[in-house]
Length: 388
Ligand code: GLU
Image (tube, rainbow, N blue to C red; front, side):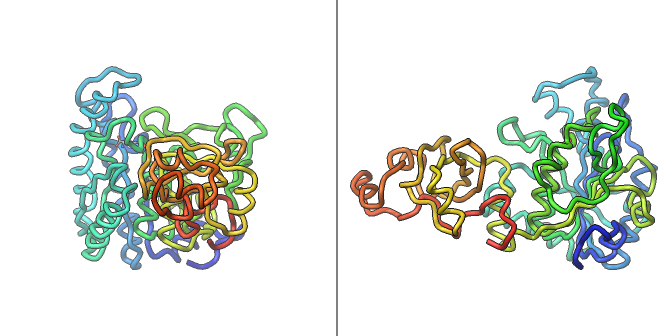
C-alpha cells in the first residue's frame, strides 16, 4: 500500500489495495419496517466487488442483517428485542441473508461462503489462527467469504454485538490493507449536521485522537436496525489503522456504492498509522474485551514508556478473573488505559504480589517465579506512534 496522506483519494487507496474488507450495515440491506432484503442494491454491490476482483483485488464481506431480516420474518414487534429473541431472529435471518448474497454473486461467477464467528474465535489465539487459515483457503479459491457474528450462539457477555469491530478484527485477521465501513452516512462529521448548522464533513483523518473520537457525539448511523453507531465505527477504525489498514467510512445509501467511491463520492478516509508492525502485538492491542486489568503506579508508567516490562512492584491492584496468557488492560493512576498485555500470572497470584519486589514475590508465592507480570514482548502501549 502506497503512503496515505491528506491528498490521497479513496479511489487511489482502493486502486492500490491488495485485499479489502467491506462491512455492510443492516440498515442498507433490509427495509426498516418489514426486514425485506434490498436485492437490487445487493446485486449492485456484488457487481462493484466483482469489478475489483477482476483487477486482482481480493475482498471479504462482513454482512449484518440476520437479526433485521429474522425479526420481520418472525413478526417480532418494533423496538428492542430480548437477547433470546435476537438469537432466534438471527437463526431465521442468517440463512436468508447468506442465500441472498449467494444469488447476488452467482451471476458474476463468484461462489460465496458463509463464515460465522464468535468473539471467542477472534480472542483466542489458536482459534484466531484456525479461522484465518479457513479464510485464506477460501480466498485462494476465489470464493467470497460472507462473515457475520454467530448471533444465535453468542450471548451478551461474549459477543461483539456490532459488526464494525468484528469487521476491524477480520481486516486484521486477513491482513487486509483497506476496510470499508458502508453505512447510512457519508463519513465523519464534526458534529451532527442535522442539529448543528456549522457542522462540517471531515474528508481525511490522519490520527484518531481523542478529539476525533469525540466527534462520535454527532450523527449516529445505523440506529434503526443495526447495533453500531458512530462510536463503534471510530473504535473499529482505530483498531484497523493501528494495524496498518486504511479505513474508508462511506455511504451505501445508493446503488453501486464502491463504484461511487472510485468516482469521487464524499467519504472519510482514515490513514493507516502502522504503529504496530508485529502481528501478535496487533492481536493483543485489538482484543475486544480484555479479561482483566492491572493498575500501575506513576513509576511503572514511566518505566513502561522506556520499553521496560511491567514488574509486580509497579502494580497497585488488579481486577478480573484472569489466568496466565489472558489479555489484560494496563491502567494508569487515573484509571486510563495505557496499554495491554498478556498476563504472566493468574489473578489469584497477581493479587498477592501487587507492589512486591522480585525477591518478595518468590517468598510470597513459595516458588521461583517469573520476573515480570507482563513481559515487554507481550505488551503493547496504546497511542504510541512508533514501532513496538
Ligand atoms: N450481527 C448482527 C446481524 O447480523 C448485526 C450487528 C450490527 O448491527 O452491527 O443482524
